[in-house]
Image (cartoon, rainbow, N blue to C red):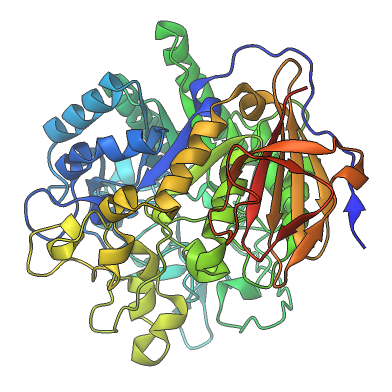
Length: 567
Protein backbone atom coordinates (compact mmCIF):
# COMPACT_ATOMS: atom_id res chain seq x y z
CA UNK A 1 0.00 0.00 0.00
CA UNK A 2 1.21 3.57 -0.62
CA UNK A 3 2.37 5.37 2.48
CA UNK A 4 2.73 9.01 3.43
CA UNK A 5 5.78 10.13 5.36
CA UNK A 6 5.38 13.37 7.25
CA UNK A 7 8.89 13.88 8.58
CA UNK A 8 10.45 17.25 7.76
CA UNK A 9 14.23 17.01 7.84
CA UNK A 10 15.32 20.60 7.38
CA UNK A 11 14.18 23.43 9.60
CA UNK A 12 12.40 26.53 8.31
CA UNK A 13 14.27 28.62 10.86
CA UNK A 14 16.21 31.40 9.08
CA UNK A 15 19.76 30.29 8.42
CA UNK A 16 22.98 32.20 7.73
CA UNK A 17 24.04 32.53 4.08
CA UNK A 18 25.08 29.25 2.51
CA UNK A 19 28.73 28.61 1.66
CA UNK A 20 29.83 27.94 -1.92
CA UNK A 21 30.13 24.18 -1.38
CA UNK A 22 26.47 24.06 -0.31
CA UNK A 23 25.13 25.90 -3.35
CA UNK A 24 27.46 24.36 -5.98
CA UNK A 25 27.24 21.26 -8.08
CA UNK A 26 30.57 19.45 -7.59
CA UNK A 27 31.87 17.95 -10.84
CA UNK A 28 34.47 15.19 -10.65
CA UNK A 29 37.02 15.20 -13.45
CA UNK A 30 39.13 12.08 -13.94
CA UNK A 31 42.10 13.75 -15.67
CA UNK A 32 43.24 10.77 -17.76
CA UNK A 33 39.83 10.58 -19.41
CA UNK A 34 38.65 14.16 -19.78
CA UNK A 35 40.62 15.83 -22.58
CA UNK A 36 44.00 15.17 -24.19
CA UNK A 37 45.75 18.34 -25.38
CA UNK A 38 49.07 16.93 -26.62
CA UNK A 39 48.10 13.84 -28.61
CA UNK A 40 49.48 11.12 -26.32
CA UNK A 41 46.08 9.51 -25.75
CA UNK A 42 45.91 10.55 -22.09
CA UNK A 43 43.95 13.49 -20.71
CA UNK A 44 45.86 16.35 -19.09
CA UNK A 45 45.56 19.69 -17.31
CA UNK A 46 45.58 21.86 -20.42
CA UNK A 47 42.88 19.60 -21.80
CA UNK A 48 40.72 20.22 -18.74
CA UNK A 49 41.36 23.93 -19.08
CA UNK A 50 40.08 23.85 -22.66
CA UNK A 51 36.80 22.25 -21.57
CA UNK A 52 35.76 24.51 -18.69
CA UNK A 53 32.92 25.87 -20.84
CA UNK A 54 31.25 22.48 -20.43
CA UNK A 55 31.21 22.86 -16.66
CA UNK A 56 29.63 26.27 -17.03
CA UNK A 57 27.04 24.87 -19.45
CA UNK A 58 25.83 22.36 -16.84
CA UNK A 59 26.14 24.92 -14.00
CA UNK A 60 28.83 23.00 -12.15
CA UNK A 61 30.54 25.62 -10.01
CA UNK A 62 33.10 23.39 -8.30
CA UNK A 63 35.69 21.23 -10.08
CA UNK A 64 36.94 18.19 -8.15
CA UNK A 65 40.19 17.11 -9.75
CA UNK A 66 41.12 13.45 -9.30
CA UNK A 67 44.85 12.84 -8.70
CA UNK A 68 47.31 14.55 -10.99
CA UNK A 69 50.30 14.08 -8.63
CA UNK A 70 53.67 12.68 -9.65
CA UNK A 71 53.21 8.91 -9.68
CA UNK A 72 54.40 5.66 -11.27
CA UNK A 73 50.69 5.16 -12.08
CA UNK A 74 50.36 1.68 -10.58
CA UNK A 75 46.92 2.91 -9.44
CA UNK A 76 46.63 5.88 -11.80
CA UNK A 77 47.68 8.61 -9.40
CA UNK A 78 46.31 7.14 -6.20
CA UNK A 79 49.90 6.03 -5.57
CA UNK A 80 51.73 9.39 -5.36
CA UNK A 81 55.51 9.47 -5.37
CA UNK A 82 55.40 13.23 -4.76
CA UNK A 83 52.16 14.77 -3.53
CA UNK A 84 53.41 18.32 -4.06
CA UNK A 85 54.27 17.99 -7.73
CA UNK A 86 52.43 17.36 -11.02
CA UNK A 87 53.05 14.19 -12.99
CA UNK A 88 54.53 15.02 -16.42
CA UNK A 89 51.81 12.98 -18.14
CA UNK A 90 49.33 15.64 -16.98
CA UNK A 91 51.57 18.66 -17.49
CA UNK A 92 53.53 21.02 -15.27
CA UNK A 93 52.95 23.08 -12.17
CA UNK A 94 52.60 26.07 -14.49
CA UNK A 95 49.77 24.23 -16.26
CA UNK A 96 48.11 23.62 -12.91
CA UNK A 97 48.40 27.26 -11.92
CA UNK A 98 46.90 28.34 -15.24
CA UNK A 99 44.00 25.91 -14.81
CA UNK A 100 43.36 27.13 -11.27
CA UNK A 101 43.47 30.76 -12.42
CA UNK A 102 40.97 30.02 -15.19
CA UNK A 103 38.67 28.22 -12.76
CA UNK A 104 38.75 31.18 -10.38
CA UNK A 105 38.29 33.73 -13.18
CA UNK A 106 34.95 32.05 -13.93
CA UNK A 107 33.84 32.32 -10.32
CA UNK A 108 34.31 28.58 -9.85
CA UNK A 109 36.14 26.61 -7.15
CA UNK A 110 38.69 23.81 -7.29
CA UNK A 111 38.80 20.78 -4.99
CA UNK A 112 41.80 18.43 -5.03
CA UNK A 113 41.90 14.74 -4.27
CA UNK A 114 44.22 14.35 -1.26
CA UNK A 115 45.65 10.88 -0.58
CA UNK A 116 46.72 10.61 3.07
CA UNK A 117 46.71 6.86 3.72
CA UNK A 118 49.71 5.83 1.65
CA UNK A 119 52.35 6.79 -0.88
CA UNK A 120 53.92 4.99 -3.79
CA UNK A 121 56.68 2.53 -2.92
CA UNK A 122 58.86 4.73 -5.15
CA UNK A 123 58.35 7.78 -2.91
CA UNK A 124 61.65 9.02 -1.49
CA UNK A 125 60.29 8.54 2.03
CA UNK A 126 59.64 4.86 1.47
CA UNK A 127 62.93 4.29 -0.28
CA UNK A 128 64.72 5.82 2.70
CA UNK A 129 62.54 3.95 5.19
CA UNK A 130 63.18 0.64 3.42
CA UNK A 131 66.91 1.32 3.63
CA UNK A 132 66.64 2.00 7.37
CA UNK A 133 67.57 5.70 7.20
CA UNK A 134 66.93 6.87 10.75
CA UNK A 135 64.90 10.00 9.88
CA UNK A 136 62.42 7.98 7.81
CA UNK A 137 62.62 4.65 9.61
CA UNK A 138 59.15 4.97 11.16
CA UNK A 139 57.37 6.84 8.35
CA UNK A 140 55.62 3.58 7.46
CA UNK A 141 54.20 0.65 9.44
CA UNK A 142 56.91 -1.98 9.84
CA UNK A 143 57.02 -5.21 11.85
CA UNK A 144 59.26 -8.24 12.29
CA UNK A 145 56.22 -10.50 11.93
CA UNK A 146 56.13 -13.92 13.55
CA UNK A 147 58.73 -16.68 13.45
CA UNK A 148 57.46 -20.17 12.67
CA UNK A 149 58.92 -23.37 14.10
CA UNK A 150 60.97 -23.90 10.95
CA UNK A 151 62.42 -20.39 11.15
CA UNK A 152 60.26 -18.77 8.48
CA UNK A 153 59.06 -15.22 8.93
CA UNK A 154 55.30 -14.78 8.42
CA UNK A 155 52.97 -11.76 8.76
CA UNK A 156 52.00 -10.77 12.32
CA UNK A 157 48.26 -11.13 11.73
CA UNK A 158 45.54 -12.00 9.20
CA UNK A 159 44.90 -8.47 7.91
CA UNK A 160 44.00 -8.28 4.24
CA UNK A 161 44.42 -5.59 1.62
CA UNK A 162 41.41 -4.30 -0.29
CA UNK A 163 42.60 -6.46 -3.17
CA UNK A 164 42.31 -9.65 -1.16
CA UNK A 165 45.87 -10.74 -0.44
CA UNK A 166 47.82 -10.25 2.79
CA UNK A 167 48.20 -6.62 3.83
CA UNK A 168 51.86 -7.36 4.66
CA UNK A 169 54.82 -7.45 2.29
CA UNK A 170 58.27 -8.74 3.22
CA UNK A 171 61.31 -6.59 2.40
CA UNK A 172 64.55 -8.54 2.32
CA UNK A 173 66.65 -5.39 2.57
CA UNK A 174 65.13 -4.37 5.90
CA UNK A 175 64.21 -7.89 7.09
CA UNK A 176 60.73 -6.70 8.02
CA UNK A 177 57.17 -6.58 6.71
CA UNK A 178 55.43 -3.32 5.81
CA UNK A 179 51.68 -2.70 5.82
CA UNK A 180 49.75 -1.98 2.62
CA UNK A 181 45.97 -1.87 2.80
CA UNK A 182 45.82 -1.36 -0.96
CA UNK A 183 48.37 -2.55 -3.56
CA UNK A 184 51.79 -3.66 -2.33
CA UNK A 185 53.09 -0.66 -4.29
CA UNK A 186 51.06 1.58 -1.93
CA UNK A 187 52.67 1.29 1.53
CA UNK A 188 50.62 2.72 4.42
CA UNK A 189 52.00 5.78 6.18
CA UNK A 190 52.47 5.59 9.94
CA UNK A 191 50.31 8.34 11.44
CA UNK A 192 51.45 7.40 14.93
CA UNK A 193 54.66 9.18 13.96
CA UNK A 194 54.09 12.94 14.52
CA UNK A 195 56.54 13.69 11.72
CA UNK A 196 54.24 11.99 9.22
CA UNK A 197 51.28 14.07 10.40
CA UNK A 198 53.42 17.18 10.02
CA UNK A 199 54.60 16.17 6.53
CA UNK A 200 51.06 15.59 5.28
CA UNK A 201 49.79 18.76 6.92
CA UNK A 202 52.54 20.66 5.13
CA UNK A 203 51.46 19.06 1.84
CA UNK A 204 47.95 20.40 2.39
CA UNK A 205 49.42 23.80 3.20
CA UNK A 206 51.41 23.71 -0.06
CA UNK A 207 48.22 23.44 -2.12
CA UNK A 208 46.32 25.92 0.04
CA UNK A 209 49.11 28.43 -0.60
CA UNK A 210 48.61 27.88 -4.33
CA UNK A 211 44.95 28.81 -3.92
CA UNK A 212 42.92 25.59 -3.98
CA UNK A 213 39.50 25.79 -2.35
CA UNK A 214 39.15 22.41 -0.72
CA UNK A 215 40.05 18.75 -0.55
CA UNK A 216 38.40 15.39 -0.94
CA UNK A 217 40.29 13.26 1.60
CA UNK A 218 40.66 9.83 0.05
CA UNK A 219 40.38 6.47 1.85
CA UNK A 220 40.28 8.19 5.21
CA UNK A 221 38.96 5.12 7.02
CA UNK A 222 42.33 3.32 6.87
CA UNK A 223 44.66 6.13 7.99
CA UNK A 224 45.22 4.46 11.36
CA UNK A 225 45.29 0.84 12.43
CA UNK A 226 45.59 -0.72 15.87
CA UNK A 227 48.94 -0.14 17.54
CA UNK A 228 48.87 -3.81 18.57
CA UNK A 229 49.88 -5.63 15.40
CA UNK A 230 49.34 -9.07 16.96
CA UNK A 231 45.55 -8.78 16.74
CA UNK A 232 43.71 -10.86 14.15
CA UNK A 233 40.50 -9.50 12.67
CA UNK A 234 37.47 -11.77 13.12
CA UNK A 235 35.61 -13.43 10.27
CA UNK A 236 32.30 -11.76 9.53
CA UNK A 237 30.58 -14.76 7.89
CA UNK A 238 29.19 -12.51 5.19
CA UNK A 239 27.19 -14.51 2.63
CA UNK A 240 29.10 -14.93 -0.61
CA UNK A 241 32.42 -13.61 0.75
CA UNK A 242 35.32 -15.98 0.06
CA UNK A 243 38.02 -16.35 2.72
CA UNK A 244 40.66 -14.67 0.57
CA UNK A 245 38.55 -11.53 0.10
CA UNK A 246 38.82 -8.30 2.07
CA UNK A 247 35.07 -8.52 2.70
CA UNK A 248 35.49 -11.77 4.66
CA UNK A 249 36.79 -9.95 7.75
CA UNK A 250 35.40 -7.47 10.27
CA UNK A 251 37.90 -4.63 9.97
CA UNK A 252 37.85 -3.59 13.59
CA UNK A 253 41.62 -3.03 13.81
CA UNK A 254 42.36 -1.51 10.40
CA UNK A 255 39.59 1.04 9.84
CA UNK A 256 37.75 3.86 11.61
CA UNK A 257 40.29 4.11 14.42
CA UNK A 258 39.57 7.07 16.75
CA UNK A 259 42.94 8.72 16.12
CA UNK A 260 41.86 9.33 12.51
CA UNK A 261 39.28 11.86 13.62
CA UNK A 262 41.91 13.81 15.56
CA UNK A 263 44.06 14.26 12.45
CA UNK A 264 41.10 15.41 10.37
CA UNK A 265 40.28 17.93 13.10
CA UNK A 266 43.85 19.22 12.80
CA UNK A 267 43.39 19.63 9.05
CA UNK A 268 40.10 21.46 9.63
CA UNK A 269 42.02 23.90 11.82
CA UNK A 270 44.54 24.41 8.99
CA UNK A 271 41.77 25.02 6.45
CA UNK A 272 40.15 27.53 8.79
CA UNK A 273 43.42 29.46 9.06
CA UNK A 274 43.11 30.29 5.37
CA UNK A 275 39.39 31.00 5.66
CA UNK A 276 40.13 33.57 8.35
CA UNK A 277 42.83 35.16 6.20
CA UNK A 278 40.79 35.81 3.05
CA UNK A 279 37.15 34.94 3.77
CA UNK A 280 37.12 32.10 1.21
CA UNK A 281 35.82 28.97 2.89
CA UNK A 282 38.05 25.87 2.48
CA UNK A 283 35.97 22.74 2.02
CA UNK A 284 36.81 19.28 3.38
CA UNK A 285 34.91 16.14 2.38
CA UNK A 286 35.93 12.65 3.45
CA UNK A 287 35.72 9.47 1.40
CA UNK A 288 35.00 6.30 3.34
CA UNK A 289 32.95 3.28 2.33
CA UNK A 290 31.46 2.44 5.71
CA UNK A 291 29.94 -0.80 6.99
CA UNK A 292 27.32 1.05 9.04
CA UNK A 293 25.52 4.37 8.79
CA UNK A 294 26.81 5.24 12.26
CA UNK A 295 30.40 4.98 11.03
CA UNK A 296 29.60 7.30 8.14
CA UNK A 297 27.85 9.85 10.35
CA UNK A 298 30.78 10.08 12.73
CA UNK A 299 32.81 11.88 10.07
CA UNK A 300 30.43 14.83 10.39
CA UNK A 301 31.92 15.35 13.86
CA UNK A 302 35.57 15.32 12.81
CA UNK A 303 35.84 18.75 11.23
CA UNK A 304 34.94 17.55 7.75
CA UNK A 305 32.05 19.46 6.20
CA UNK A 306 30.54 16.16 5.15
CA UNK A 307 31.41 12.54 4.41
CA UNK A 308 30.54 11.43 0.91
CA UNK A 309 27.18 9.67 0.85
CA UNK A 310 27.29 6.56 -1.35
CA UNK A 311 23.80 5.23 -0.61
CA UNK A 312 22.54 6.08 -4.12
CA UNK A 313 25.68 4.66 -5.77
CA UNK A 314 24.69 1.12 -4.86
CA UNK A 315 21.15 1.19 -6.23
CA UNK A 316 20.39 -1.12 -9.15
CA UNK A 317 17.51 -2.06 -11.41
CA UNK A 318 15.80 -4.12 -8.69
CA UNK A 319 15.32 -0.93 -6.67
CA UNK A 320 11.82 0.57 -6.85
CA UNK A 321 10.23 3.47 -4.99
CA UNK A 322 10.40 1.83 -1.55
CA UNK A 323 14.06 0.99 -2.05
CA UNK A 324 14.94 4.53 -3.15
CA UNK A 325 13.10 5.84 -0.10
CA UNK A 326 15.12 3.62 2.24
CA UNK A 327 18.40 4.82 0.73
CA UNK A 328 17.45 8.48 1.11
CA UNK A 329 15.83 8.18 4.53
CA UNK A 330 18.81 6.18 5.81
CA UNK A 331 21.00 9.25 5.40
CA UNK A 332 18.51 11.95 6.29
CA UNK A 333 17.18 10.38 9.48
CA UNK A 334 20.66 9.54 10.81
CA UNK A 335 22.40 12.80 9.86
CA UNK A 336 23.31 14.89 12.94
CA UNK A 337 21.16 17.97 13.53
CA UNK A 338 22.53 21.04 11.79
CA UNK A 339 24.67 19.10 9.30
CA UNK A 340 24.41 19.22 5.51
CA UNK A 341 23.41 16.26 3.30
CA UNK A 342 25.02 15.28 0.01
CA UNK A 343 24.38 12.84 -2.81
CA UNK A 344 26.54 10.87 -5.24
CA UNK A 345 25.28 8.52 -7.96
CA UNK A 346 28.58 7.54 -9.62
CA UNK A 347 32.36 7.82 -9.57
CA UNK A 348 35.48 6.36 -11.14
CA UNK A 349 35.33 3.21 -8.98
CA UNK A 350 31.75 2.13 -9.66
CA UNK A 351 29.54 1.19 -12.59
CA UNK A 352 27.87 4.06 -14.38
CA UNK A 353 24.30 4.75 -13.39
CA UNK A 354 22.99 3.93 -16.89
CA UNK A 355 24.57 0.49 -16.61
CA UNK A 356 23.31 -0.19 -13.09
CA UNK A 357 19.80 1.22 -13.44
CA UNK A 358 19.18 1.20 -17.20
CA UNK A 359 19.34 4.13 -19.62
CA UNK A 360 15.65 4.92 -19.09
CA UNK A 361 16.37 5.85 -15.46
CA UNK A 362 19.30 8.23 -16.05
CA UNK A 363 17.17 11.39 -15.98
CA UNK A 364 15.27 10.19 -12.92
CA UNK A 365 18.51 9.53 -11.03
CA UNK A 366 19.92 12.93 -11.98
CA UNK A 367 16.64 14.45 -10.77
CA UNK A 368 17.19 12.88 -7.36
CA UNK A 369 20.81 13.99 -7.34
CA UNK A 370 20.03 17.62 -8.15
CA UNK A 371 16.70 18.25 -6.44
CA UNK A 372 17.16 16.48 -3.10
CA UNK A 373 18.39 18.76 -0.30
CA UNK A 374 22.15 19.12 -0.05
CA UNK A 375 25.21 19.08 -2.29
CA UNK A 376 25.27 16.93 -5.46
CA UNK A 377 28.46 15.44 -6.89
CA UNK A 378 28.57 14.30 -10.54
CA UNK A 379 31.25 12.12 -12.11
CA UNK A 380 32.23 13.28 -15.60
CA UNK A 381 30.01 11.62 -18.19
CA UNK A 382 27.03 10.92 -15.94
CA UNK A 383 25.43 14.09 -17.30
CA UNK A 384 25.60 12.46 -20.75
CA UNK A 385 23.95 9.25 -19.58
CA UNK A 386 27.03 7.21 -20.53
CA UNK A 387 27.11 3.47 -19.97
CA UNK A 388 30.14 1.38 -19.06
CA UNK A 389 32.22 0.26 -22.02
CA UNK A 390 33.41 -3.27 -22.76
CA UNK A 391 37.18 -3.50 -22.28
CA UNK A 392 39.08 -6.56 -23.48
CA UNK A 393 41.66 -8.15 -21.21
CA UNK A 394 44.36 -6.99 -23.63
CA UNK A 395 43.20 -3.37 -23.23
CA UNK A 396 42.66 -3.61 -19.46
CA UNK A 397 44.62 -1.02 -17.47
CA UNK A 398 43.24 -1.46 -13.94
CA UNK A 399 45.77 -3.40 -11.81
CA UNK A 400 42.94 -4.94 -9.80
CA UNK A 401 41.39 -6.31 -12.97
CA UNK A 402 44.70 -7.59 -14.34
CA UNK A 403 45.49 -9.65 -11.26
CA UNK A 404 42.27 -11.65 -11.76
CA UNK A 405 43.39 -12.81 -15.19
CA UNK A 406 41.51 -13.09 -18.48
CA UNK A 407 38.76 -15.31 -17.07
CA UNK A 408 37.58 -13.08 -14.22
CA UNK A 409 38.98 -9.58 -14.84
CA UNK A 410 35.59 -8.26 -15.95
CA UNK A 411 34.11 -9.03 -12.51
CA UNK A 412 36.28 -6.47 -10.74
CA UNK A 413 37.91 -4.15 -13.30
CA UNK A 414 37.28 -0.45 -12.74
CA UNK A 415 38.13 0.44 -16.35
CA UNK A 416 34.58 0.33 -17.85
CA UNK A 417 33.37 3.61 -16.23
CA UNK A 418 36.71 5.36 -16.89
CA UNK A 419 36.53 5.55 -20.68
CA UNK A 420 37.33 8.88 -22.39
CA UNK A 421 34.82 11.71 -22.27
CA UNK A 422 32.67 12.08 -25.39
CA UNK A 423 32.81 15.59 -26.86
CA UNK A 424 31.81 15.35 -30.54
CA UNK A 425 31.53 12.97 -33.50
CA UNK A 426 35.12 13.43 -34.75
CA UNK A 427 38.04 11.02 -34.23
CA UNK A 428 38.03 9.60 -30.68
CA UNK A 429 34.98 11.77 -30.02
CA UNK A 430 37.16 14.87 -29.76
CA UNK A 431 38.99 13.52 -26.72
CA UNK A 432 42.33 13.01 -28.48
CA UNK A 433 43.94 12.97 -31.91
CA UNK A 434 46.12 10.02 -30.89
CA UNK A 435 45.91 6.78 -32.86
CA UNK A 436 45.17 4.89 -29.63
CA UNK A 437 43.72 6.29 -26.41
CA UNK A 438 44.62 4.97 -22.95
CA UNK A 439 41.23 3.23 -22.78
CA UNK A 440 38.92 2.61 -25.74
CA UNK A 441 36.41 5.30 -26.67
CA UNK A 442 32.74 4.42 -26.19
CA UNK A 443 31.48 2.70 -29.38
CA UNK A 444 28.31 4.83 -29.39
CA UNK A 445 30.16 8.13 -29.21
CA UNK A 446 28.31 9.56 -32.22
CA UNK A 447 25.05 9.31 -30.26
CA UNK A 448 26.11 10.16 -26.73
CA UNK A 449 28.66 12.95 -27.30
CA UNK A 450 28.09 16.34 -25.69
CA UNK A 451 27.84 18.32 -28.93
CA UNK A 452 25.19 16.02 -30.39
CA UNK A 453 23.17 16.17 -27.18
CA UNK A 454 23.34 19.97 -27.02
CA UNK A 455 22.17 20.32 -30.64
CA UNK A 456 19.45 17.65 -30.57
CA UNK A 457 15.90 18.96 -30.89
CA UNK A 458 14.35 16.71 -28.27
CA UNK A 459 15.24 16.01 -24.65
CA UNK A 460 18.68 14.52 -24.04
CA UNK A 461 20.36 13.55 -20.75
CA UNK A 462 22.71 16.53 -21.07
CA UNK A 463 19.98 19.09 -21.68
CA UNK A 464 17.87 17.58 -18.92
CA UNK A 465 20.83 17.75 -16.53
CA UNK A 466 21.29 21.41 -17.41
CA UNK A 467 17.60 22.18 -16.82
CA UNK A 468 17.70 20.40 -13.46
CA UNK A 469 20.86 22.19 -12.37
CA UNK A 470 19.28 25.54 -13.30
CA UNK A 471 16.17 24.67 -11.30
CA UNK A 472 18.35 23.71 -8.35
CA UNK A 473 19.54 27.33 -8.16
CA UNK A 474 16.09 28.42 -6.95
CA UNK A 475 15.88 29.22 -3.25
CA UNK A 476 13.37 26.44 -2.58
CA UNK A 477 15.86 23.81 -3.70
CA UNK A 478 18.86 25.53 -2.14
CA UNK A 479 17.53 25.70 1.39
CA UNK A 480 13.88 24.66 1.47
CA UNK A 481 12.41 21.93 3.64
CA UNK A 482 12.25 18.39 2.38
CA UNK A 483 9.40 15.98 2.99
CA UNK A 484 8.91 12.56 1.39
CA UNK A 485 5.39 12.34 0.03
CA UNK A 486 3.86 9.29 -1.63
CA UNK A 487 6.10 6.20 -1.61
CA UNK A 488 5.26 2.72 -2.85
CA UNK A 489 6.86 -0.11 -4.82
CA UNK A 490 7.01 2.08 -7.94
CA UNK A 491 6.75 5.72 -6.90
CA UNK A 492 9.11 7.92 -4.95
CA UNK A 493 7.93 11.50 -4.45
CA UNK A 494 8.82 14.43 -2.26
CA UNK A 495 8.00 18.08 -1.58
CA UNK A 496 10.45 21.00 -1.41
CA UNK A 497 9.08 24.10 0.31
CA UNK A 498 10.39 27.44 1.53
CA UNK A 499 8.35 30.21 3.07
CA UNK A 500 7.66 32.98 0.56
CA UNK A 501 8.80 30.85 -2.39
CA UNK A 502 7.17 28.45 -4.82
CA UNK A 503 6.48 24.94 -3.59
CA UNK A 504 7.59 21.96 -5.69
CA UNK A 505 6.40 18.37 -5.92
CA UNK A 506 8.78 15.85 -7.49
CA UNK A 507 7.26 12.51 -8.55
CA UNK A 508 9.35 9.69 -10.07
CA UNK A 509 8.56 6.14 -11.16
CA UNK A 510 11.42 3.77 -10.28
CA UNK A 511 9.30 0.68 -10.77
CA UNK A 512 8.89 -1.73 -13.65
CA UNK A 513 5.24 -0.97 -14.45
CA UNK A 514 3.03 2.04 -15.13
CA UNK A 515 1.88 3.78 -11.95
CA UNK A 516 -1.17 5.92 -11.22
CA UNK A 517 -0.62 8.69 -8.68
CA UNK A 518 -3.24 10.72 -6.82
CA UNK A 519 -1.46 13.57 -5.06
CA UNK A 520 -4.72 15.37 -4.28
CA UNK A 521 -5.57 12.43 -2.04
CA UNK A 522 -2.51 13.33 0.01
CA UNK A 523 -3.97 16.71 0.91
CA UNK A 524 -2.23 18.65 -1.85
CA UNK A 525 -3.91 21.25 -4.09
CA UNK A 526 -6.03 20.02 -6.99
CA UNK A 527 -3.85 21.64 -9.66
CA UNK A 528 -0.19 22.40 -10.30
CA UNK A 529 2.08 23.69 -13.08
CA UNK A 530 4.48 21.33 -14.85
CA UNK A 531 7.94 22.83 -14.37
CA UNK A 532 9.92 19.91 -15.81
CA UNK A 533 9.16 16.47 -17.16
CA UNK A 534 11.29 13.53 -18.20
CA UNK A 535 10.69 14.35 -21.86
CA UNK A 536 9.56 10.90 -22.92
CA UNK A 537 5.78 11.31 -22.75
CA UNK A 538 3.89 10.41 -25.93
CA UNK A 539 1.18 12.99 -25.32
CA UNK A 540 0.96 16.68 -24.45
CA UNK A 541 -0.88 16.28 -21.14
CA UNK A 542 2.29 16.95 -19.13
CA UNK A 543 4.00 19.54 -21.32
CA UNK A 544 6.21 22.03 -19.50
CA UNK A 545 4.18 25.10 -18.55
CA UNK A 546 0.87 23.26 -18.58
CA UNK A 547 -1.44 23.26 -15.57
CA UNK A 548 -2.47 19.72 -14.64
CA UNK A 549 -4.76 18.06 -12.14
CA UNK A 550 -2.93 16.22 -9.40
CA UNK A 551 -5.57 13.58 -8.77
CA UNK A 552 -4.68 11.35 -11.70
CA UNK A 553 -1.05 11.33 -12.78
CA UNK A 554 0.20 8.42 -14.88
CA UNK A 555 3.92 7.64 -15.08
CA UNK A 556 5.74 4.87 -16.92
CA UNK A 557 9.02 3.44 -15.55
CA UNK A 558 11.73 6.11 -15.55
CA UNK A 559 9.31 8.99 -16.06
CA UNK A 560 9.07 11.92 -13.67
CA UNK A 561 7.36 15.26 -13.19
CA UNK A 562 8.44 18.36 -11.30
CA UNK A 563 5.28 20.30 -10.43
CA UNK A 564 5.29 23.89 -9.24
CA UNK A 565 2.67 25.41 -7.01
CA UNK A 566 2.68 29.09 -6.10
CA UNK A 567 1.43 29.47 -2.55
